[in-house]
Length: 501
Image (cartoon, rainbow, N blue to C red; front, side, top):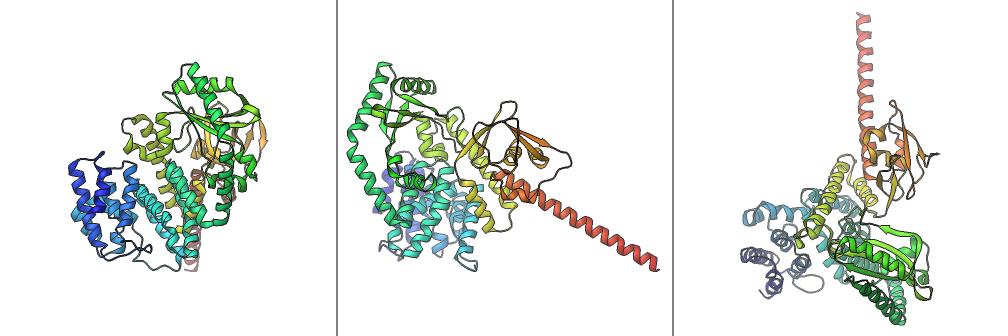
């Protein structure tokens, strides 16, 4: 029971004695079920579910989730069945375990098909209970930590899947600490030489610039102290995968990325965030057009903060994030903050509502895709986090994914507007329906009551809603046309029979 004692040290901080007793029973069932099983690392298999539970315990998740985490591999890897778990621990825990388990009883053509079907299953289970994906993310995190014991090809395949699906999922749910760890581990496994090279350069940069970072923090702290604004100020570490992405996507070199100094300021309330922004802009010169207000307009995963870019001492580029304690916790924990910070109900509920809406849109997408491969590809498309903000002619703000077109905008306003779309004006000028929109543009949609969605729109729309509604309508039109054609052929056939007689 020594492994359970490690867990119990965490459990005692926030769970009741009754809940801990149930967790102890779940641990014993998992330990006995996995008896004799050894991981590739040489450790007893039970160390894996214990490690997964530890990750979730740090997020202060409820006891049912933790029980399911301890049992998450027993259906898949042992003789214990769904009914066994249901009988012992109830329907909820059994449902969570079943949701995380792979489809091992099915025959697949290849590993790609198995991967797509299993991901499909997990995401659909997430629709029923969000905790399924939290367990799966913790499971993947521990598997990535111990990836070194696998063969090179399997290691690369798992790392690629992690970077394409699991870290974006963690980001979409706002769980920043898991997203970052999955990215760093995935990057190291997939591109070990690039990872090592960037790590060494970053280490050198940080060592050489400690004094400058310390000086800037001192200047900011002194300025806020004079303004009588209580705060915490600290430097933000740049993550290696984030640096690599900027090099690839924005074609930037090391010096242009690492020469930017990043800081974060944490304050008590929202009003103080804007007061700090004013003080910082008096201290350093702000760069025009480089202030982003994610407090007024939160990101789709619930993230809130003020971002500003400035020119610091000696012409040094500086980036600063300003947020409250609540915002900082939501930024790190996302949807999981609901369990850890129940006293901050407003922030957590907002994040929950947005997440539930997104999950419901996934269910609608799944109903309108032909197979699991297509569904997973659409999921990948949807997980890209970047957004733009555009305006309706009346001044309402509409949030869209980067790369969105006027057709995406039309469907964001209303499904019927999208269906009836025949053209667009952007900033009062004619604009192609297939051309991407930019931040700050004002869009007007031209409609016709006789219009119908076009199959070609699927080649350029990027939003989940637009793709789902277009596909759904085209399927209905195809069915309607088929029925009309069959009816016409039947009538012609009946007419011929009557004439012959």
